[in-house]
Image (tube, rainbow, N blue to C red; front, side, top):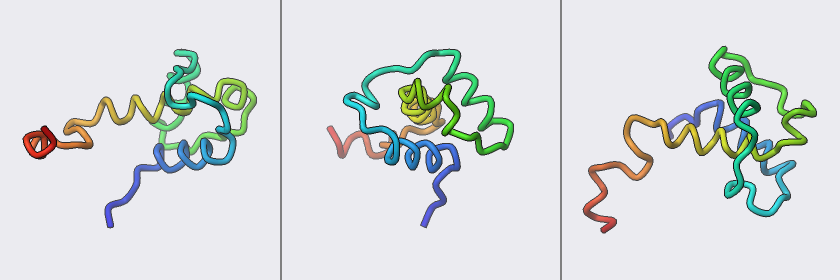
Length: 86
C-alpha cells in the first residue's frame, strides 16, 4: 500500500472535518495563505490547521491539495495510462 504524503493526509482530514462548504475544491483560497501553508509543510512541520487563518479561509487548504497534484512530476492519471483513458 503506497504511503499518502502528509500534506494530503492532513489537508483532506481537515476538509472532511471542517469543510462543509459548497465548492470547497472549486473555489481558490487567498494566495498568501496557500503559500504560508505550503511553507509550513515544506519545513517538515505539520501545521495547526485549526488556526483562525485557515478556518476563515478553508479554501486555501483545498487549494494546497490541488497545487500538490498539479506539481507532481508524473500526473496522478499517468502519461502511460493516457491512451487507455482516451
